[in-house]
Length: 258
Image (cartoon, rainbow, N blue to C red; front, side, top):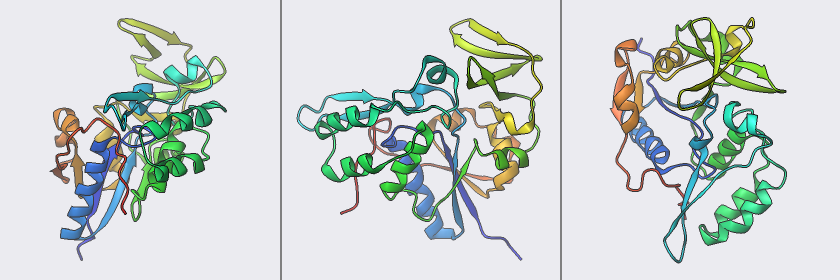
């Protein structure tokens, strides 16, 4: 008896209004589901720590100029090194940002934004995507979920969530050492510590194998960037599908169904 297809796409939280390429992945997955059936799974890589991932590029409604908005989090260590699911939003960020939004989006989106109550960056993004109706009928699997981490396979290249200066940071494990990348050729080496698989998340090169060991997807929607680095030989059982093209792919998706 053949099991039903599992159609997967992966993405870091990518702005409080998602980037248009994420919307294109969702649309591609829904089209494929209409063709072959099965379940859609969003592999949300909320363990990523790069604050640039959540920049939200919005066009001014009158001038058409693009502005980049991003979260304000509680301190520098969080901003640079904590996973997105642990970056805590400052208390005044919502109100300050809501005042700017009428320049860029309509009232319905502003209401969704004002109603979002999550206190971490990743949770806020997911609450917004759900509020916009983008994730209806889609299962979300998060790389920050300890149960998912516990079930995942062993990998040779990985990051570890460890304490540092009163926060949890995502440090690269390299030749027995834990390192934070300060930029350029500058690294900070953290004290050696014992860690468990619940603290481990993959690097870019090991992410596909790690994800697949838990999700067992049959089809994977690959974005333009992913096609360049995905090690498809790590999961020969997956049928890789190119995501549909979309204009202004790196800008925020701000449309809602009527």
